[in-house]
Image 1 (cartoon, rainbow, N blue to C red):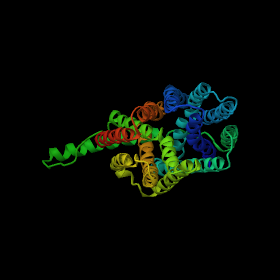
Image 2: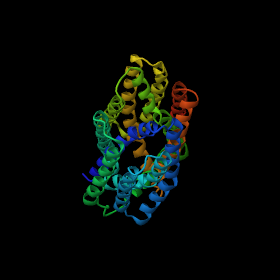
Image 3: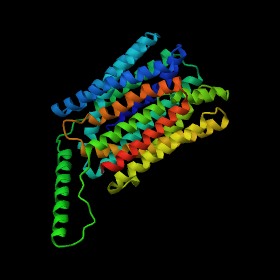
Image 4: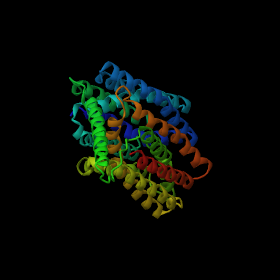
Length: 398
């Protein structure tokens, strides 16, 4: 149960994910401010992900970087309570990004090294399900704090305290693996399998037998493009989403806690998705599943265009779409995390987070900008198109 500290961490950021853009908005900030904050933070996290991924593999120490991440987040979130100036809040959030990614590469490596290859997907599904449940509890805390009119300082102190709990829990429960070899074994296994298939196909051709099988090696570059495009589409779609849900809630005279409630349902469906992903996804069909899931996400993004006419029906449709989006994202993430640990070489454990960060950072600015400069319908259209391009990349890479 070494992942328990990550559960508390995700509780804090589940609450913060909806609270912070609404808080910035309440301080007379605009969607552009929200976009700049998230985009700058994610761009800063890109070199940080490279650094943390490289240093943890180079030193073969993982626990220490997880502890550094949680302790730094505790302190910086406390600093949030000392100001209500937008520029300072944005600056602090950018600093948070540098340490927020510090636990990601070590966590991925720990899962890959503590479990045999055939259990990677199950292990990633369990971890993501546990942390998504923590995110869900954080959103529920958001409903409670909003309902009982907690002030911003109390909410931010709660987020800081949850990261402190994550630090102490990880200090006790997380241990570095005694031996680090599972990823190397997988690389050797894939090379031998590729060579064997080549020899088999060649021998069949020499014998005059017609061979339908193609010898094709997975293309890491195309896989990386698929990751970036999916992250870009997701970020464009979800960065301004709390504001969009707030708009349709206000149009229907619903309380602000409704915004948190919608994201609670989104996160709850993700928990269910991770639970099912660990049991139903078969390894031999993982590439097909990724493409199919991304195609579903594209359809859901296009369907959101129908909700731009603010009404009671818009609220219902948007809620259902967000529930389905959370469910499909769970299957997507379990697949690509497992694939990334197979494809990405040792010493570059942070590459996955870098690629996700590139797409996420760009989308964090583009999404709010499109929403403010044009409208949310345009946001949903662009996101849907990018999901389609990501689908093509995942279909091509294998």
